[in-house]
Image (cartoon, rainbow, N blue to C red; front, side, top):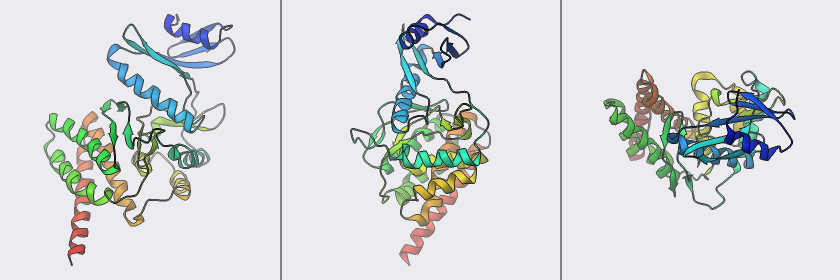
Length: 300
C-alpha cells in the first residue's frame, strides 16, 4: 500500500536512514518501529488539533501513559497526525487497572496549566463525535455549567423536551449546591475515560489511554464514565481514591459522581438517542430531590 507522501516525508525526518511500509493507519519502519498515521478531511482540522494538544500535554505529564505524538499539522487544508503505534491487548486486568489508577492520581491529575488559566482548555475538543467548546473559567462551577449547557442546547435543537427541562433545573440548582463551595484545583483530565479508550500495551504490559477529550477540571470528573457500563474493575477505583481522596465534603462524593455521570448520559443521548435520555433524567431528578431535601434540612 502506498504511504501518503506527506506522512512519508515526516517519517523520513524521524528516521532518515529507514524505509517504510504499512497498511491502513499503521506504518512500520525498517528499524522495526511502528507509527500510527492518519490524514483527515478539511472539516476535521479542529478535532485533530485538539487531540494533538491533549496527547502532547498528557505525555509530558505522565510519559508513556498516552501515545507519544511525533508530528501534526495541516497540508492543503487537511490535517495529519503521526504518533506512537501501540499494539493493544485485552481489557484491563486488576494489576493494570491499579497501575493506571496510580499514574492518574499521582501524575496526570497533578498536572496544571502552566499559565494558570483556570478550568477549561485552550482548544475545542471532541467527546465522541460531540464538539465541546472549551475556553477558560475561573471556577469549576462555571466551567461545568458551561459544559452541561452545551449538551442541553444540542438536545433542545433535537427536540428533547423533558431532559432539557430537567437539565436546566440541574444547572440552576444542583451545580451551585454541589460545586460552588468546592475547593478543588484544575488538573489535566483525559475527559472521556471509558474502557474503549484504555488498554494494555502488549509489548510492555503497561496501561495506556488514548482518544482524549482533554481539559483542566475537577479530578473526580475523570471517574464518572469509568464507572458507567461496568468496564473498570473495582481495583481501579479503590487504588485511585487511596492516592487521591475525595474532595470535601466527602459526604457528597456520591452526589458529585452522579452529577458527573449525568454529563456522559446526556452526551450519549445527544449522539445515540435511545434510553440514555431517560437514564439522565432519572439521575437528575434524584439530584434535585437531594438538594431540595438539603434545603429543607437547612431551614429547620
